[in-house]
Length: 520
Ligand code: XMP
Image: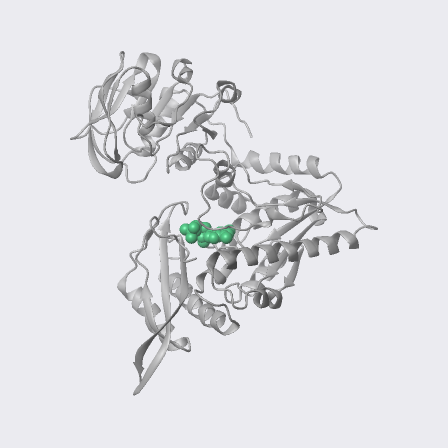
């Protein structure tokens, strides 16, 4: 989607690039992410009011340091460089950048200098989240310093050329007045006006789906999560009962999830949902499998096979009715789309995520991806406007392979029941403490490790449950939640008392990176 007069973010491979684009959209101004090496014509198609150069892990002196077309800096469109974006801007315009050994992040204090539209209404001294990497030590001609930290020049600009740059990250919440700085860039420096309106989004998307589908039928695989539910609700609004949804019980869902989700989506959202209990098939195929990637691949392949079977059945049933199913609905989000075009290219496979994208070639579906321009928080808001129940909208993300990747070692019905029971306690206590909507995810993991304990007067040799609760904004990075001790205590006591066979509970205090959120 192209909305003109928004902000184009050129991606140098920084971990916060998506966050920059989201922050701009929070101002109701359209933003799109393009790889830094996007051609000028591609950038011009957006007719941007402004351009932001993202941060990135490189040094401008690296052999294959990422670069933009330098014309970007001469096109009279205002540019804000952030972190690496600042260094690249300074370096390219003839300034002097001093290389550093390695890049680190941390807090620093910014002291402003002079006046700058970028800092309208911002105090003279503020706490920022800085990147300790290369530093600008000599300014390009026409530039002045607008801020410093104890160590370095931290903000520069050439107001006449509408170029400004900061070494710190205004997009992260740890930077005080970061939102104001981005707002100043968008409105005061670029003169953008609000052009990203969610109410308009629903109407336009529904009309576009109606044009695309005509009087054909569509199919959607529901996962029980937010994205597929919102995608289904949008398509349902467009084509009504010509949308059929399929929800597969893999046998690895959370406690009561299959029945509760079916009921919620059928009764409260009014969706036409086929429930398919395929748990026997999934569990028998997983017998003896312990390797995480084999688990993921086996489940992914099975899921696609089950879904394809359902699609064939439904299509055959309908040949003398309203016509074959020609469309497949997917809840693909903007981050998935950017991932495949980013400068880094498709990121290295750390874990094989599954969705129904890998359907057999003989299934001639066209895709409908109504959310492919949205971020998760935007999807939640759209869902709310469509009247979806809060239970679905605030639900924690759940991996496609389900509990299989939270049960380390071999998957058996018995072990799944143990994990399900422990997981239900963790989630319930997090809810009771009023934390469910504050944390990103909260769940239990079952280890293949037994340990000695004592219960009553007897020795036990029981299972270990890990409690995993993390804070995150986008799952790209995450930190373990500093839960109150009383909550941890309650969880631990209840799990040991209520879940047969478990005598030990541990809390996972690893952040991502270097760990991941899930254990497999
Ligand atoms: P990791 O474990 O990689 O997870 O830090 C990041 C986020 O992705 C979720 N996740 C998945 N979601 N299919 C999904 O739709 C999957 O296969 C999958 N694996 C992990 C995970 O719960 C976390 O929110």
